[in-house]
Length: 176
Image (cartoon, rainbow, N blue to C red; front, side, top):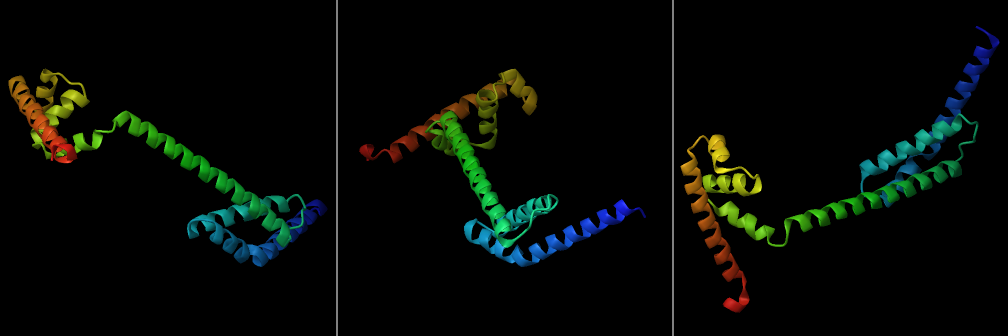
């Protein structure tokens, strides 16, 4: 072995010992720090792992890994986690607002009325109005005649209208 290789091995061995000592001294404290400040054990474990990954990288730079250095890293990791959580919640809220705007306010009533239709009537309505297929295309999809599709569609529209009208009157207190 060359002299440089032996020195490199000694440096790497010293680095590992230094890191393992810091890990043994701080791991449980860092985990408890995250556990008190986050929503679950798995999040605390993930954040703790991030802290020690960063600490391992810093140990390459010959920086001392004292408890205070490790907790400084932990504070930064926690701040990043909070920012990430806020961004994720904001995105989720934006998507929910966008979805509710697309669906409209009467969507729940319509869905409920659709669920009460016969399955073959509901399928014809959905294929025609939601999916935009013509009677001929729906007849090919369902393997029935175009006349049967038009008849089912007529019955489905009539039944849906009755269901929506009935729901409207039962929910409106001024009609009671």
